[in-house]
Image 1 (cartoon, rainbow, N blue to C red):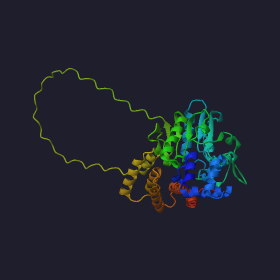
Image 2: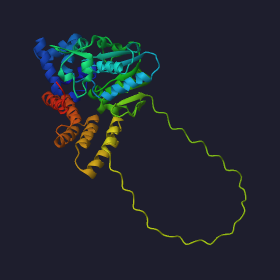
Image 3: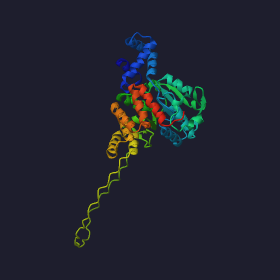
Image 4: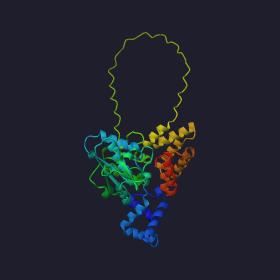
Length: 401
């Protein structure tokens, strides 16, 4: 299995630790049966000789997990960015785009913001041809519609026997391509982007590959371009030339470092010493001693503030605030969820799982914990547990069918 893991790392940058060797083994066994190979060694040789089979293995490994208007404030920020921009045409990129829910959400958000379709272009790229075929079809089942705010479904979809079919006028606004962020030849379109959605991809890479991917994203962005990441990825940008937008729950950064604060003007040199008139020394009054006021009470740690810091990638501060909150106020599902997010971002999966379990013990319907614990289990290869947690997350929102 190590040999297959190395090939997948070379092909798509996948870090085997992010999904677990068990997931890779299941995919390999499935492809051995499909190719009627004698054994794993025979399939390995077959795989090396046939690029199309490597794509088939990638298709088996990739499991789409997305829905419309996931982290909706990020789409609102992109729409605001478009409205505030000059009349020139804007270019957006979603990578990976999976089965299309994200780029189509972006298109709907721009239309709802009354941005004319001739003012924007959306590219959507993924390594999975199967996911792209699904996206181009534009037909979606109930799992793609989560949460309670589903008015857009009535405006942009029509019901059919196969599911909800997206309006062709929206579908034509998104241009799908197969490509790989780590393969410049598949990305070369001679274009830079005003905003890039690259959410929940970097968590599947090792540190070196994350570094390489972020440099690639930086190259694809226009000056001051917008980059939207997943919640557990924001801390990865701290060594790079990006500045957080400070817009809560968007997980968004602008290319370029913030301008340094202006230096105070230099203090003028003192004028030559002048002699001042002498005044008679008055009798010194005895000081009146008063008791010192009590020290101010430190404000209680705020979990809302901790969530905003997590959004900005300031994970050490998040952990400190959460521990302080737990010490002062006792057990809290939100505090344990945020600690799980911090551990997740640092690839301390066992520690993250422990925090997520504590959060769910305190609040079994904590939606964000259910989603992130589901993703963690999916990366570990525990697909049945991941699916059960996703279903619980869906029920926790009271989503309509």
